[in-house]
Amino acid sequence: MYFCDLPEDLLIGVAYCCDVASVLNLGQTCKHLYAISRTKSVWISIINDLKVRGFVDERAAPDASNLPFEGLVEVIRRILDGPRSWRLAEGGNTFEPKVKHHIEVQYRATAGPFLPNLKLVPGGQYFMMRDVDDPRGLECWDIYLQCRVWRLPWPEILQPEHVVSEYAVVRKESGVLLLAVLFNKEHTDDPRLEVSEVDLRPAVPVYTLHCSAKIPAWRILSFVADSDLIVLAPLIEGDTILFNWRTNSVGMLANQTREVMAIAAAPGFIALLLSPDNSGAVVQIIDAQSINEHLHYVDETSHPQPDPRVPIILFNPVFAHQLPAFNPYEAPHGIVVFSSPLADNMYRIWAATDSGQDEHGREDAGSLHRLEVVYNARSTEPPLLRSIVSPQEPGGQPDMPSLAFSGHWASISTVWLQVVHPEGWHEIIKDMDNLLLAPYAGACITIRLGEGKVQVLYFE
Image (tube, rainbow, N blue to C red):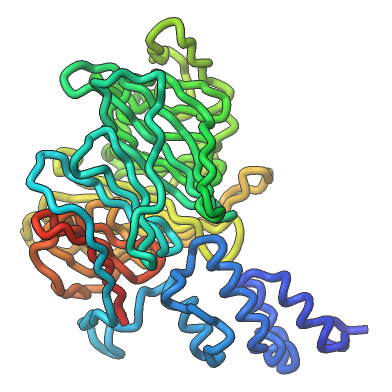
């Protein structure tokens, strides 16, 4: 019996268990399976699964069952290529982003010195911000209910002089929010890192503290769901700090031959952008297991100082890819890793470099390099790669935290949306404060301090 001879309901049941890429591949097999791959119920199941995992904003598909088949596919394409109005016109090199609707959430206006440090949680329902009046406060707001729903409990181990200096928030597939919060004193270095989670689904949110450790760091560089490693910038000049929050162990990233220009964590590995030499720059992947073998347990009896002599991580990468040379003295450079919604173990790596000027003499010529990687850290198979390098564009490269999976990006003071095509950019919004582009949703969030408003913009 051939696979396509199986009963249709059984084939549809198989498709229910597939990811996006598998369903598309199934449809390329034969005409009969092509029809199965276009079954609406299969794609509704896919969309609902992507909602749970935080890839699809609820406003992009509030009720997937009401969408036609083409509308369901468009939801997936919105993640991959950005909203329809962000894409290049057919045969052209320009596009015109349009705001479909926006939501305003009112909070207390302030003229205080503390920026709220706004972050939009994947999935689109919540955002987090530091309390504008209390530097010790960290709040979670519900965009749809337009109210505050949770506030971080103040750790008893901290002193009154401590404040929330840095934080990062990610969304687990269960819908629970995972937090990494770095506390420090305003005028004296006494940092502490805490990792916790909060479940906002019950009527009374459930808060769980996972670890609390003294780490000599001042900034969180990378923190993602399904990864035990947090990447931090040290208080003193030196190499990057890696902290495993599950084992409470820490280590220093060291490389004897190249400078680490940027680093990003991912499930099961970290990605590095290394400074160029005569042959160019390098993107490396280091598996998490080899990192964890060289980390040291944090001893609370003394301030931890990771041993820089430990030959960790960089001596045996599982993957290395050459990039064109760039000017390491032009800043900023960056790297970010996104999990792909298409299939498990698929990742999109964006590396941003600045060559100072291009071959035509244009200043601030930045490039975005996109690497599509298939990698399972539990497998012995090497990573598979498809690399697409963007052309140089005048005006530098994006601030990496505001980069979207699709390659569009936003600057801090003015929104610029850019695709990886020549001249594919368009200015749409000016004079926004603390702006952040949602990684998958085709939305951005910004704050107006003087007016006491948080705005979430959704694009067509």
